[in-house]
Image 1 (cartoon, rainbow over the protein chains, first blue to last red):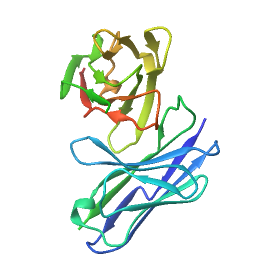
Image 2: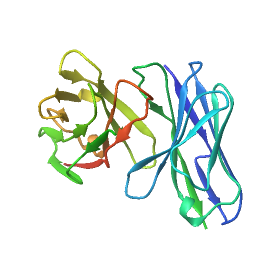
Image 3: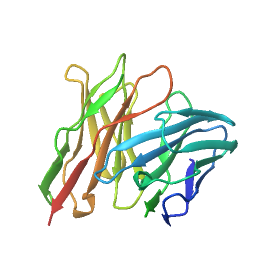
Image 4: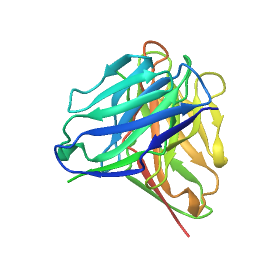
Length: 112
Length: 114
């Protein structure tokens, strides 16, 4: 089974600073990969998904971008953070038509 | 577009009593349905899923869910709740075609009272 790794676990950044969150997948190849944001109060919002290297689909236009430079690496970035970017960021991976998405431990981002 | 409704914000249950968390869905075609659990400051953990076959699905930690096509429901159940079952529970649905994007419900907070 696959394992999703995320780091860092917690991040405090000033407004206007850049962001780079990394997600890596262990135990499978050619996974579908997803970035979600969970705001306080629980709902999950899909931000980006990728079906392969260099293939990124954006769900919601915003201050963030994603890249997939390697098969099992998915990066969430921002050039200039906003206060509204604070939240809990989750990476997930799955494979196949009947895939189950498995989630990483998440990164708590606080923008001050 | 697919969607999920989890009508109750919070479910309180006494330890040892049956636990039910409700979920109804909307999707075109036969649904793929999922339940996840989230503990504080942790990622979502997969509990169980329905793809096809038997309407009663058994999953991790003694949980089960019943797919009811006529009522478009997929309620999560556990015969005897534990204090450690206190967590946030998410129902999710996707269509069997197109991309694999999941639609999540808003989540239900379950509180098991000792």
